[in-house]
Image (cartoon, rainbow, N blue to C red; front, side, top):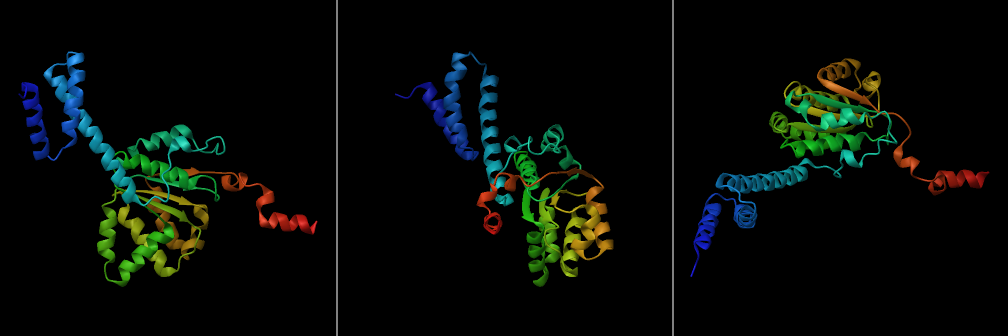
Length: 263
C-alpha cells in the first residue's frame, strides 16, 4: 500500500512533468533524505530543490552556448601559461573573465606576435562569458568577412548584421594575418560599426594599430575602425617568441635539418 511519502513523490513527479522540469523529480527524492537527516524546514528543502534545478539548467545552457559559439577548442584561464607570457596581467584577465565589460558593451583587444597566447586568452574570456549566460560567436576575421560576403551576395547583409547583433559577444580572431580588399574592408567596418556601444567584441591581431592601414587598404577606414573598437576597450599587448615554436626542438624542423646538412 502506498505511503504518504510515495503519494507525495508521485504528485511531485506529475508537477515536474507539467513544468517541463524533469530533473526536479530526481533532486526532490535525493534531497528528501538529506533534509530529514539535517532537520531542514519546508522552505529550506524547497530552496535546495530549486537551487539544484537552477544549477542544472545553467550547466545545460552553458553547454549549448559553448557548442553554438563555434570555438575551435575550449580554453580556460586556468590552462594558460602565465609564466611564458609575463606581459599578461593575471589579475586583469581574471577581472575581465568576471564579465563586467559585457554589461557596458566594452571590448577587449589582444595584440602581439603569433604564438603568444592571444587566441587562448580570447577563447578563455569568451568561454567564461558562455557560463554567464552570454551568447557568443567565434571566428577569424576572414571567416566573419566571408560570412558577410555570402549574405551580401544574396541580399541578406542587413539581416545577417541584425542576427550577429543578437550575439552579446563576438570574438574576431587573427586580424592582420590576411589583407582585405576594399569590399571586404567595408564589410568588416560595417560589422564593427554595428556593434559600437551596443555589444562587445574580443579581437586579436598580430599587427599594431599603426599598421592596420596595410590590412584594410585605407588608413582612413582603418582609423575609423580603430576609433570605434578602442573607445570602450581594454587593450592588452603580448610579447615574446611563439610558445608553439618554443616547444618544438630545432632538430624537428625541416629547415633546421637542411641547415645542418649544409654545414
